[in-house]
Each structure stands twice: as C-alpha cells, then as structure tokens.
Length: 65
Image (tube, rainbow, N blue to C red; front, side):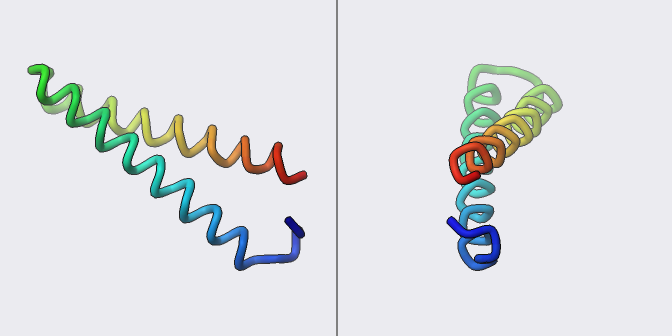
C-alpha cells in the first residue's frame, strides 16, 4: 500500500475503528449481563476500544511499512 493513497488509509482506519467499536460493545454487554455495575461495564468497554484500536493501527502500520 502506497503512503500517498489517502483513500485506502481512510478505508483501513474505518475498518479498524468499526472493529474496535464491535469489540467494545461485546465487552460492555458481556460484563453488564453478568451483573457488573454500569460504570465498570462502560469503563471496560472504553478500555477495550482503546486497546483494539491501538493494536489495529499498530498492526496495520507494521504490515504495510
């Protein structure tokens, strides 16, 4: 992938962010359904989002450069 191709970079960013959003939603739902407090469920979802997004962007950079 070329570094000058903004369209593909934007597409990959969108895919990574959507994947992170799905992971965060699943994490939040799993904790909420097991009886965790709302604040703990939301905090774990936020942490999962940040972790998956960071991992996704790092892996994309590693694989393409």
